[in-house]
Length: 390
Image 1 (tube, rainbow, N blue to C red):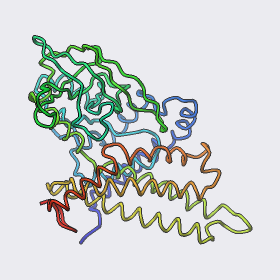
Image 2 (cartoon, rainbow, N blue to C red; image 1 turned 60 degrees about the vertical axis):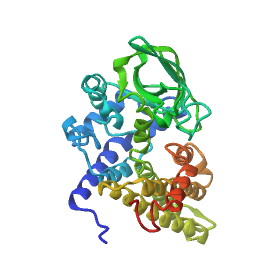
Image 3 (cartoon, rainbow, N blue to C red; image 1 turned 30 degrees about the vertical axis):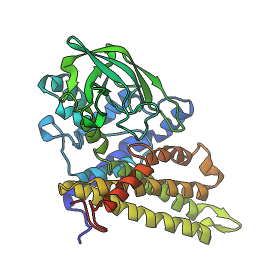
Image 4 (tube, rainbow, N blue to C red; image 1 turned 30 degrees about the horizontal axis):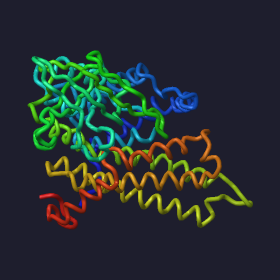
């Protein structure tokens, strides 16, 4: 087995690392100051400026097809880049992306929604989760009733990422109450904020926050149906399953940066006349973190590699998500312990990471859902121990 990167993969990774180090990391102190004042770490205009600067480096649309001006990078390379992004706590991402299910739009919808989103002129959000449903994505109550050439939407979505900033939402709603959402009873719609829905900020323990979206007799033209009638849940699952390996890829970058801080601190901080790194308790925390980080790295890269082979990535991605999310929580916890009281203060980003990474075990599929997927694949014979989905 060859675990080495190709020259091209290494060059792309190193260029991404240089950009993050030179252009994004210098903004960290200002971002921390803003967050302490309960402000956004990076304004929309600042993010846009950075993304356009990155575009000059060639980083635009990591997963976007070339026909739309993107890079259409292999999954392994995307994983490497998301690890580099994770090295900074500034909420940055490369531009030129759009929700994958927007590519199912018709030609007119692509002009109105997909292309402006790729160019960064519009912001979208994907709305399927509802109050009381959580991981039960099929438990959809938001109703869409046909009225002439319109559909009238009533209900609520919750914990919607980008919901506070989006100017249009991809909404999955019940269109046939006699059928289950997962059996053709739900449909996806492209719903502009100007059509009447509103968002309410949800305060969380992390920085920023998701939104609740409220739909009260929101009229949506029939031409704004995304995909076919009854295809909503199927499209939703394509959105949820997209790039599940990218979340732990990002966690790798966080863990690497945090562990580096712990090593530096252990080599310089002195107590009782010697460096704390000379203490076995500290050494074991560093060793355990390194072992877990490397184990997670290869689970994640294997999941990405599985995508590139065209194989079903659900099993490998669930393992990567489960272990990667747990790994970064354990590493950041140890890093805080090594820093002692300083790690608990807001003078360092450790406490911020501590709050941030806790979300990774919940969103885009909880730990429990990943365990369900993994065990179900084994029990039903969908995969073999040490193998991949057939």
